[in-house]
Image (tube, rainbow, N blue to C red; front, side, top):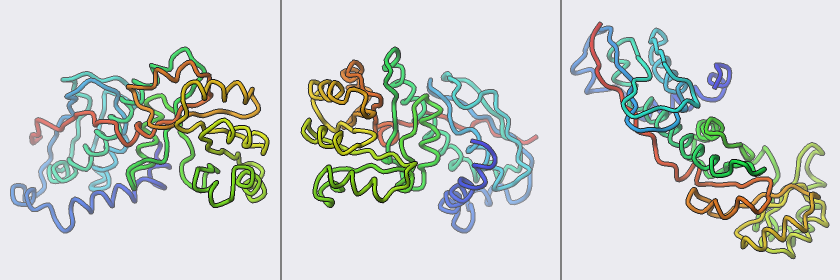
Length: 283
């Protein structure tokens, strides 16, 4: 995550997280460290995985004090092992103590998503199918969570509702049917926008294809029906399958032949990667 992205999109969110944790003052830190004292603390890995969010972790401390120095021996996307020391944070001890939890919350969450994503991507190795995330993200964490998916080797679906057209069951119901929904979307949207439509059976698929949908999402269909859907589509549209896809059940989808598999679990169910700040000392 580069500096421009950080300043334009992330700083405000990070500051909000810091304000959530420090509404007026850090009473504990101020009671034991009333004055400036230079110190260092180590960033330690307590679980094997993939690290993601190092720049965000660093930015937490920089927003508290721009003089804070953070150095890493790893970069986003690297594998890390239990017991490794991957960073040193040097600065005002009051800043190190007050920023610790917020910085770790970001890094643990993002690294957990990257780790989980990498494990699922490995299950798709050798197929043409790409792994996508969804909008099932933690409020105010989307930019961080979707970045972590990319670090883990996955791909991003649309970022938000302004980013692309995805006609789901309720949109289709509001429009009066698949054909009507696709036609209305094509008439309204700029020509550069693709139109994706969610279908639940083969009849809806045929209707979506006839209406000219660009992408067909096969939602919660049987494996047999999805294979038939790919055959019927015959390259006239891109295909995506979705519906409670997890690490435990994705293997059944590998040979279907869809272009994409989307999984909300990447962001809503990935466990954190355990990391900690230890060995704080004055210098």
